[in-house]
Image 1: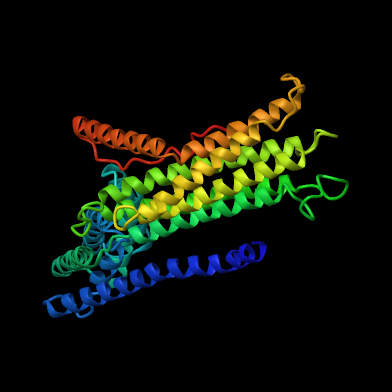
Image 2: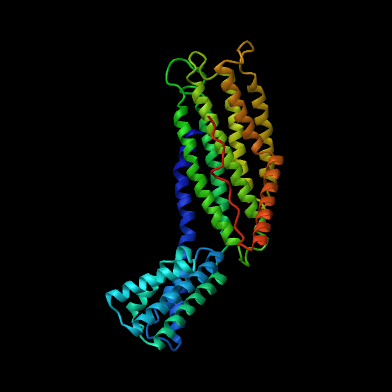
Length: 418
């Protein structure tokens, strides 16, 4: 097991980098082809000899998803056209000087803020300066530049409609990897109950390194953030995309699964904190041999639950998940059995007011929460709550006339265990 774990740690970053490089390479190719196509289309029209504004606009318009491309096209067309008109007007009337450049930048920023272009405000003065560099000083030149912008934006939108993929596979793989990462951390927590040779019973020597495990549990938050980013891109790729088909329920399933794994990470961190505190109780230490054996067995089953759950969520909707669901149910049942046996670890004469008893209760609470999170009933309730939140937000946006915002997982509103 340790050798396999070490091998998986070395291999996983390579696999993750390979999977992330694939969509990036496709996006680079799509950008390049779109820009060249925009240039060739503009070159075939009676425009300037080198219509470079068309490929420039195409590069600015094309985004990772179709929804982002459409939104970017609207904002960038406005930004570029305004910048072009300002530059052309100033170049045709007073020419290019240092104070004309300053006036163009100031005017562009004022119009950008007035039009509420958001992150695209700076593109207005940038477009104006590019037009100065390209030398558009006539009315015909102005029309050519605006038309080049429209050609580039049109090619960007066309590329988005034709080639914008649905990025669900990356999010599915990220969910599966996160489940494996949490399962690996839980196995390490179980291994920490047996420092050195198994069966030493907590005798003198090096104790379990629970503080280090606690630090590793906190670092899982970075994996959760990366998974959330991948899932956000996947959800955006479904919006307005004709290829989405019946994949919208998958977005809800993946978001609900990420929420479950996130709460699992919180409880796993709390469990590591409780065991680290129990390590400093003095003579009592980290339980007796039999109790540690039961706790270790319960943690092993929970780690398998995490892996099975990650695979279940990753494969849901598009594949047969009965095998993963059965495995999850089996490990849950065995984990609850081990938890019940571990519940009687303390001697009956230990006072309920003692620190040992309170920490034992904390460990049991975290075990119960971890097991309950993967229960089928809890998963159904979580998914129904997310669907209700989506319907509520869509209804609220429709009543207020505002945009339909994608619901986000309340990542930062989580309980902070002791």
